[in-house]
Image: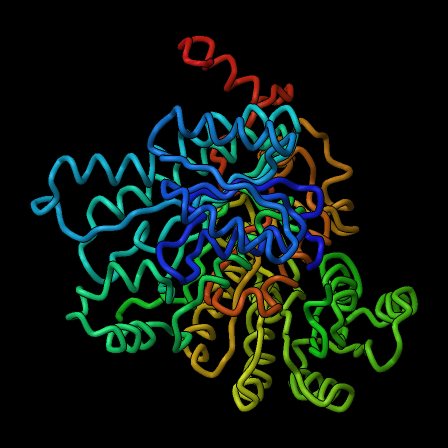
Length: 266
Length: 280
């Protein structure tokens, strides 16, 4: 355990992982705690959030779990108030929550569209709405928005509402970055590339004909790096953006994709 | 935590400013560093001031545009450290002017130092990195690569070229375990930028654009670029390749020139919000 986030308080949304694996949110929460941050792990599934909090406490870190559906203003307000009530401040707002789905405009139902936009995009508005006043009082804060390479490229299946929601995160992050820079708050985006994560295993395997090993092999082959990333790659980059080492990095869109979006052809 | 323990690095343009900042950070992270610069006196002075042992810090005074410079750099680093893990192409020069003002010699000089030299040094070293299955290349570009600035022709072209070179190396050598990224600094306070900007009237449009257009409430320091370089050189960034990270206090996201009287953006925003009654 080192101290790149010593004295900081980080709130991570979607910090639980369904099942036994470690997803992006859980990895970030664990790494933040390892680096000295006090962590609030929130998830719509309180059991999953609890299991992340237990993993952190097991390592000697400090973490509380909270249940939150980030598409609801009341939940966003409550989780941030709980964070501040427990730890006195909020230094890192890590917007990790995301759901995914495939299909084009014809295939999507209006209800699917609304849910995708509410969970992935409206949540950034709502978490920012309640976290920024605290950060403004502190005169410091780092907002980290976990978007996707789908925000800027179509790879490789139609994901109409998903891509739209992830692109919206970029614009919101930029707005926050500019409006709040003068008071010492930064906001940046990570574009997540192909990652060997539990959620991908659960959701995407049918797109590859149901063969998991075949899916991993095909995804490895797509990357200029020759391999997919791991959830810790997202966590390590998030750590840089959360720490004061990136104090002059603001409004940035940073792909963590092994160079994938540089390729014109897959 | 030392994130570059056991790594050896080459930093060009290392004698002062951003390059020196990168050297200091790399040493603090546990790396051995070969400092390369054309300014031999400054190089010696910096080496003395950094006070590291010979086994951790070496310097080489060389003109990067010399035909034998890449070989000399590689041989010096290999002799000193046995291998090369990290290459930082930081050295850069600028000559201002519109294309009508530029001579061929001036153009060649800017492109020679800023693009051709990084290409030739990478050509010398990247295949060696590929043989060992590990390498990190970090190119220092500029916000000028993507944003138009007045009378900055050759510099902007050279930095855009360096960004393209960054992507090419990343895509071609990714499978060999090499990552290649660029950092695009915004306003960074160095002896050079202070000399250029310090004497200018702060109300001049150029100063407004360069300094006033940065949302961060402070100017960047070489240590800010060094922090990003250390991240890219470390294992933390093993899945980050082919990209440009702006370290500019958000300047790249802004597209207007603030009021010359220094009215803060925050106040603009607050007035806007009041007028539409949407706050709270």
